[in-house]
Image: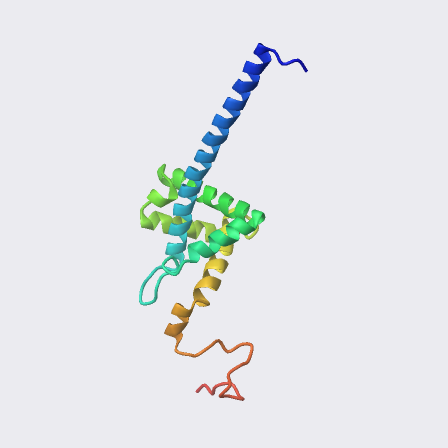
Length: 168
């Protein structure tokens, strides 16, 4: 291949354009991820809000999901598609993102995802997030303090009883 001035300028233009597009796409992805993160955090906060016990978001359930998100590509794709569905449904209801909806409408969107058919994306998104958040939340030491027992009964069972409790 002969490298003349025209080929050199063409090559420089392609390298510059590729670099510019890569930076643009990378920046756009980080913005989309920020929107997705806000929607995910709001969704988690509505599933297990703070009351007498700390909320799931306060205890870091979103970070637990993000770690899973980073380590499992299939999980990441499912969660991303679920968040896209959240925002799509929010736009259909109120022409805004999920995070910007009033709380009553956000709860309505969550309710819609819960009531869908079993093999649909919204239902799978709801069940996946719910299961992961509940598993993290109810295994957290801060929450276990509110249940007034030293440890979970399994795998050792209740050490003080050989029979199940008597119920009148």
